[in-house]
Amino acid sequence: MKNRLLEWLNTALMFNLFFVLLSFFWFAIAVIGRSFNLSLGLDLWYKLWQPVINPAIGILMLGAIVSGITSWINRKLGDRQVSSD
Image (cartoon, rainbow, N blue to C red):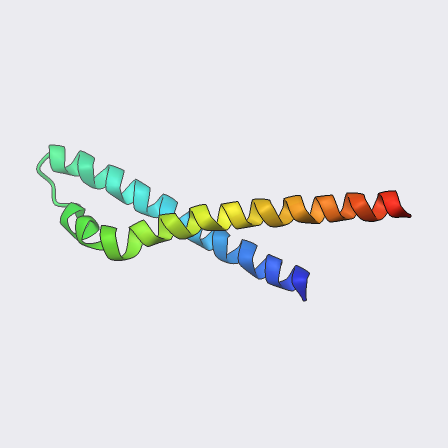
C-alpha cells in the first residue's frame, strides 16, 4: 500500500513538473513575442499565474521535499533493520 501511494505521488509530481515546464516555456515564448509586438498569450499567462501556475510550483516544491524526506526515512529504517539482523 505504501509503495503504491509513493508511486502515485511520483506520477502526479511528474505530471506537475511537465505542467510547470510547459508554463515556463509558454512564458518565455510569450515574452519574446511581446518584444516583437506579437500576441502570444502573455496576458492570459499573467491571469493564470496566481490561481494556477503559482500553486503548481508550490506543490512541486512540497512534493520534492516530501519525497526526499520519505526516501531518507525509508533508508534510515532500512539501515536500522539491517544492523539489527
